Length: 398
Image (cartoon, rainbow, N blue to C red; front, side, top):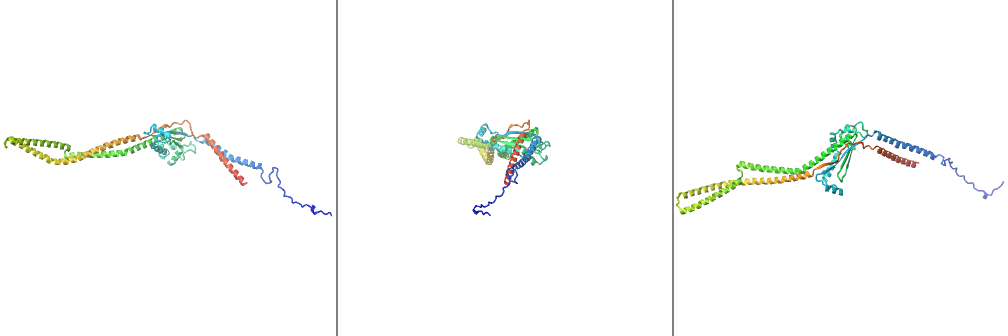
């Protein structure tokens, strides 16, 4: 038996594990083939595209082309102005970008709130049947007022959805447009809105004018009452004392007393001269002495009555002074009222309309092809985002 040298004997190496048999596509057995995965992904993407893009796009196109109702616009443009506005102020406002009159600014704010108010809806309903105009069965369901007999609050909300307003804060220009489903309704509603806005501005202007004049008119009434009271006091004085003008009577009495005193002085001078020339009992001297006694008696009687006259004169002077002051106060108040009227007239507001409501010749809404294009863009964006999210999740789970 042949013996082998142990040094020449090599250790037997362990055979490696057999490798997995590769398929003809180069992938491990048990894993899906790339073509299979690609085909299934394409089918899934196509199905999602049909469900998320094509079907909704066809429905949207059908709605915008066949179902959506034509909507006509009726509107107007105006600006609230004041009588004090002038070209210089407007030029300054256009250069500085500021509004020159804060009064008209606040009035414009009132008008903007009024355009969206329930009060305007109720006033317009007196001119136009809004429920019939917005709730007709021929209108597509998405834009129809439902129910037709909806409460006034819901009608107001629907009104706001059909109304669009633009306001330029620099120039104060206001434009409004109302959507309706016939050109006649759009014109009638816009005309009614403009009429009631004009009435509102007139009411606000009249109320502001009354506020300006109210204080002056109240002061004038007080001055008139004071003057009437002073005139009545003078009339009562004359009726009670049967004296038209005690001041004039007192003046006449003063002149009369002065004349009597002058005659008395002359008589006494003549008596003194005759007493040196003739005897005491002469008829001429006796007559002069009788005349002296008569003048003294008359003078005493007049002076006795002058005390009573003084009280009347004092009372009459007080009445005359009050009447004079009342007349001056009335004249001053009347002048103040006229000045207030000038200010009130210059501060009046009015509605300057630069765009009258007109009958629409063609519907401006809906913009069908634009809406269709926007629908397609939106659907493609949604589908793309959904595909990306799905692909990301699938890759993470694999």
